[in-house]
Length: 206
Image (cartoon, rainbow, N blue to C red; front, side, top):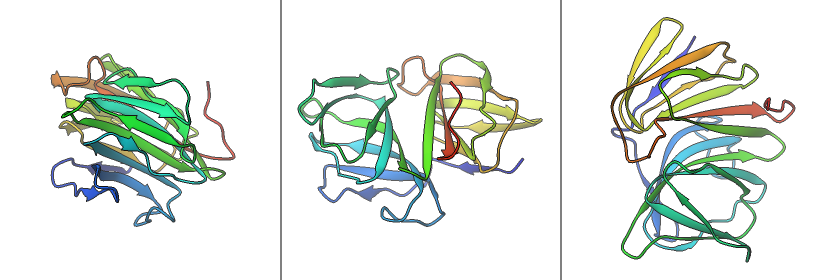
């Protein structure tokens, strides 16, 4: 099984066009794709100020807050408050969305973007040490650690620091084992997020 480690240390940040935050990319397909050409993209964003999300026509999104509190409002609908551990939320990237944070604060969130008609995604929070179920029909699986921990798969043990990620670009069977080695990184009960990407012709199991 070919696993790739994406360490948090040294991960470059890119500023948003509106200057209200920063994004660091964990993984993208195809490799090296930009915002106009990706099939799917996983990133972590730091939100510094309240304001509108960028519009992404034809893109579906999932978002989980890792630090702070983020309140989203979609095209005039009721506000949805999100904080660490109570997500994720799925929404269309081409629906107008306003994000609000408390004055002087900052929020950090984990994002998945998939190009509609090509890919769909599933983001699952892991709150307890032990087995991590994996859906075998996924074409890519990513594990994003929120604390110092270990991930065990097929006899291999991978040590992870907060916000490190591990990816596998092949279908996986069975399950992984997740164990915390130090306290959770400000995320409440969540210690790990499992992200699985599916080709659009396949739908994730319930």
